[in-house]
Length: 379
Image (cartoon, rainbow, N blue to C red; front, side, top):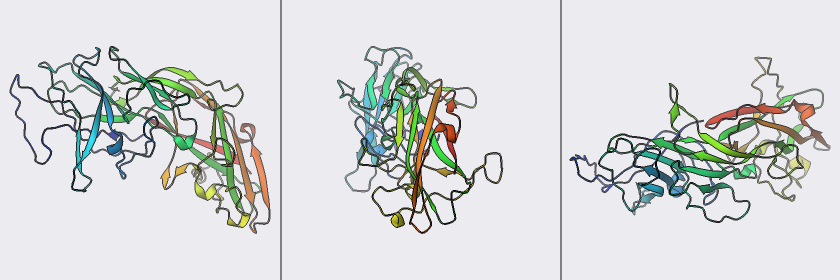
C-alpha cells in the first residue's frame, strides 16, 4: 500500500520563509512538517465519511490526532489526542497552513520525546450509538501506550481506511510525520473461464457477491509502533481483535454483501464496476455492457492476467478494508446473470464456493498491505 504523507504544520509565521536559530534554553514551539509523498483513497467513519486522496485534498478537512510524550513509553504529557487542523488563507486560493492550539513547547531535553499520530481525527469518543464504525475508543490520558479501538464498517460502500504514524526526532526540530495504512486492503477480482454459456454478444452482469468468514469486528491499534527491519517495513501493531463466527447464521459481522437489489435491506450503493453491475428494474436492452468476455487461466502466462477488478467508486478503484488478523478464512457466493445478445433472454446463475474454488484462506492478514483475491468461475 502506498504510504501517505502526513500534512501537519504549526508555526508562528506562514507568509515568509523563516530561519530559526535556537538558543539553548529558549522556548521552541513544537511544529509538524508537510511531507509530499503520494497517498491513495481513504475513508473515515465516526466524524467524517468520504474519499481522501491527493487530488481532492479532503485531508484538509479531517485533521489528525497526535499523542506526544516527553519520555517514550510514558503517559502522553505533551499532547493527548491533540487536533491538528488546516487553516485556509482568506484569499480563496485553497492554500493555508496546519496549526493547533494551544501551542506546546519542546522540553529542555528532547532526546526521548515521541509522537504517535492517527488520521482522520475524531473527538475523544464518549458513549457512541450501537453500530458505530471507525474509531470507537482510545487510550486514556494515563495510558503509557497510546492506542485507538476500531470497528470495521458493515458494508463495503462505507469502507473505512485508517492511518497511523510514529516519530522520535531526538532533537528540537520540525517533526516530520509520515503516515501509513493500518488496515489490510483487499482487491477483489473476477476470473472467468468461458465454457459454452457465454455466447458472442451476450452480457455477463453481477447481481450480488456474498463473502462469509471470520472477519475481525473490532481491534486495538497501538500507535507507538515504528518501522522494523532493513529496509524499513511499517507493520501496524494490532491486538485484541474480536472475530466473527463464520459458522453462525448470516449477520452483519460474518457476512460482507457486495451489491444487490437496493430495495433489499441493507441497500447497496453500487460498488461493483458499473459496466458489470446488473441494474434492477431496467429492461434487458438497457443494461450495462457487462464484464469482458475473457478466459482466465492462472497456469497460462497468456491468460493469467485476464481478470476484472470488481470494485470501484466512480473512476477510482475500490477495496475491502479489513482489520488485520492472524488467520482469515471466507467463502463466496456469486449471483450473476447472462443476457442474450438480442436482449430477449435473461438467465440467472447462483454459484457457491464449491463451484468457484476452495475457501479463501489468508494467513496472516497483515496491515499496510494489499491482497489480490481472485474469484474464479467457470460458465
